[in-house]
Length: 251
Ligand code: NDP
Image (tube, rainbow, N blue to C red):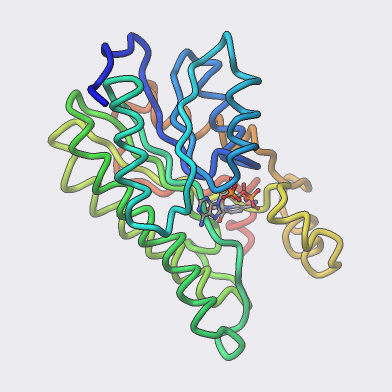
């Protein structure tokens, strides 16, 4: 399909837009007047997002598994076919699998690396040439990628790798007007954390030890992601910012 007329509105491509933090990021950009390309495996959740934003933003859907190398290619093509431009990429989809190294099998190790490192790398690789008027990449890391975390194993290692990816992209593409930053959330209540929320050590370590004495919200994350991607963050490049109510300061 040939590229349509270039959208008047800026366009953001968000991986993992079907739930949790990614869904909130999509709604934040839509409220600010952007059009959206949403990527995830659950088609019905993406269609629900599209329907609920009708009248506010156009949402183009790319259904697929981000670990499939063809999906980043298809997602950027969706942006260009639907809107004729790409202004921002949010690498949000991630695997929540974690555990001690001695308990981590190869399938788990591969899933975490493929979802939270290879996929963001490939999405950036495909998105950068499409950002012909400059742009912004925001990677969603984790506080556990900044300061580590007991029992975090592959998850911590891969999220730390995203910090390096952020710095590398910032250095290499800043001259093209493409800024890259990372948001490192602490504990945010989503499907990912609800699965373990009632476990007492999890709550104690990640909630009650936070100086703010609360968990973060998906809106907390979405607001910072939007700030970094928008012109309001126009001189911020290569930074990894903890969004954790001060939790890392207690480490
Ligand atoms: P959720 O489990 O609520 O949502 C995960 C999203 O990622 C879904 O939209 C899911 O879509 C998508 N996704 C996951 N794997 C794939 C895949 N292989 N292919 C395509 N899409 C995929 O998680 P959160 O919103 O909590 O997490 C979002 C990001 O924030 C992750 O990178 C996570 O590591 C990070 N984070 C979260 C924290 C928290 O406390 N919640 C703290 C720190 C970081 P679908 O299932 O439809 O494919």
